[in-house]
Length: 424
Ligand code: SF4
Image (cartoon, rainbow, N blue to C red):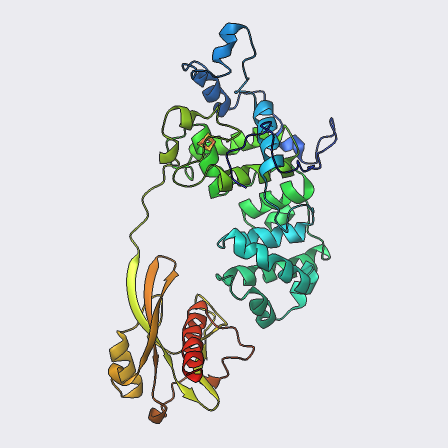
């Protein structure tokens, strides 16, 4: 998929057709983005780059021999090159190929903090259970969280449901194509708004995520933080200009795909990139150092524990309150995370009156929440203690309850251990 083929080099995969807007028909909303007559700043930058010495054997060098020079500063040419690459290299993803704004909305929310491979598996099942905003709005929170189980960051699922309810109540169940109306829906920020408008409605609205920031920062050799003005403005202007020169839905997805497949974080895969020729970052030898972002704060290292407390046909558990990160989900008892209220030994002594050594350790796992890197011990509290904790009750771990990701990891360790011992 990401091999070094370039468009026109005899691709082994068939070229897929991408629906395009009819020539001469301008998409609704285009007027907002029409040129003010002023040359966008990014264009002058690429044009000035034309003064750089050409690479040996490049098409520019060949001008001296009377042949064509590629107009790298021309956004129409950039759009054409990008789309030609996208037709050949794009991945088959379940949400591609249709223009259903609900499917696109769900995919973009899922993709915000989850790997494409995981979303590829879960997106069709989620849409089968909730085929439109109305069905999600009618679902209970527990049903929605259950359908989201395993994707993590459950706040996204709650916001999606809230957004679906707004669509149901204020827009008769139809996702609006008006940018302001779309932006008023809970959970739809500038990026998701851009993705829905461009991909579903083919409106020239940029969708700028980390991938796009990286690609454009490198292409234009932007040496400052892309989240801050004026870099942010330059990136947006570049995208707006680009989207005027092809089907916006395809161009937005092509940019994202370029960031995911070629212009990756760390070392970009420049050979085979459709923008290899005009890319200033590559020419200046700084592409791998871009984008320039402030260093991340060092993660906090935390040690904590989850305790398996058997009784009454289940395990002791607590439902997390609305103020918690994973509100509404069930957790096994323990000192807490990402911050632990006390070391595991102190916590078990205070709550069960026993020593940590009295609780056999089944295993440990690593977990991450925001800026915390957490090491979690999984231990079993002896049945004989009989202690209960306020706010907790015994719950069947195989039932319908939605557990936090950390508790599910602990329950898996427990189940694996149980399976191993029962097979002996
Ligand atoms: S040439 Fe390299 S750095 Fe430039 S856009 Fe392509 S992959 Fe990114």
